[in-house]
Length: 115
Image (cartoon, rainbow, N blue to C red; front, side, top):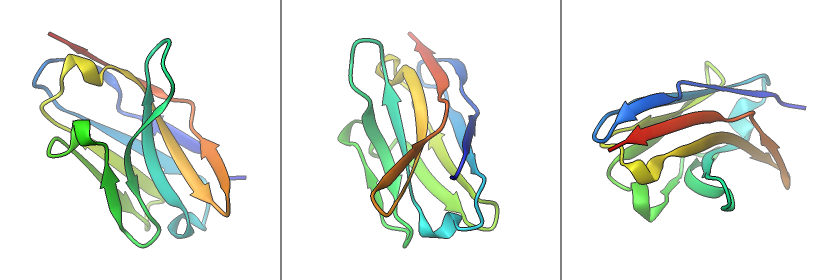
């Protein structure tokens, strides 16, 4: 069972930047599709960005041009570089690992953007 540990959340003003990291405890990291989701109270968890095991990337429309997802298979880590942050980006960001129909989630990291 892979374990995921997120880091890098925090509080910034609108227009600021943050980089989230998610370290995975598996030597099979390169076989997992990795993604970032976010959730705000009262709403469902929504996908933000995804990178497949082959490197194909997808973004939510709301973050295109501002967020960049990347993975370092040598370090078993996926990143989310967030720039030009907006108050609507506020939420708990979760790392997700997907393989063979099974989802694994990290504990989440809080991102707060103030106007």
